[in-house]
Image (cartoon, rainbow, N blue to C red; front, top):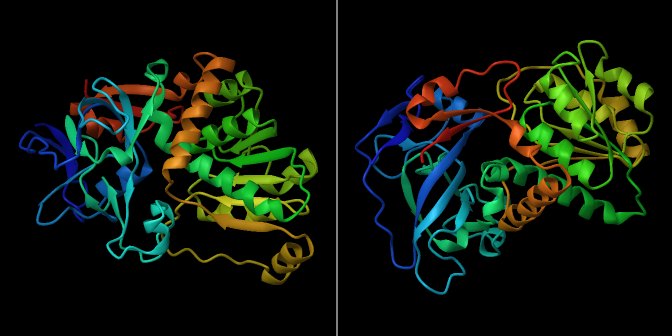
Length: 358
């Protein structure tokens, strides 16, 4: 069987191999034929040797956590049938398991000994087939065939928004304006999800105004601001009170300005996993004073639980009903999986690159 793999810890090791064993499902497991796999920054960083670990004694790790497949075989009694479209969740519980993992909240694991498909300890989905426990497979309607591969990045958005709303039950809160920082896949999906919930949404990113991303967002009623012309520090004056900030840039330099954008009782969601060891000069006294006196909140979010996948399916369906074909435009490149190396080279107007397996 063919698959896209890396040698974890080895820089620039991504390759396509043809010697990956066919899946041998354990009792109760399904076999899924892969249709598509999305390429994201995590895959690039594993290719660069920054992190990642192979399962057991395997000399390689099959990449890929953004996925879409079709069920080939499945035992009866799991709510799935042959031919169903499915997306698999990514994280598996720790071996203890801790209380969150024992409660199907693997995304909130306390021990850090979880495993993740295509990232750490388990092969991913950039292969022709894989086997999986049906509890980790989320069914999608065939009407989402052309956008379902976006579900995994959409779940990061769903989790962040859900957590923000649940935390803000601490008070009477009527949020109206949201700012999304970053116009990558997660940023655009966050903007769309917030717009569907009735927010006035502005996306701020590096790209100049009038480009593909700006025009795409405008079709969905989402404003765009280029930070090349309007610094982040000017957004509060330009937009007025900002109730929610969703940070999705991947840039260390944006984290503090993101928090400083918040209005009274505002919430900032940090979704980027920033690397490096950069030191920044921060006026901690002013930041602390504004956070405390303004009842502001900042939290981070990563990975997602099954309920976030199910919520993402609902949003993808709603988006297709409201604006047919819009979500599909986020997939700006489709390549055969044998061209996986080429998929790592992005252009400024790329949003999401997808590898096709079938």
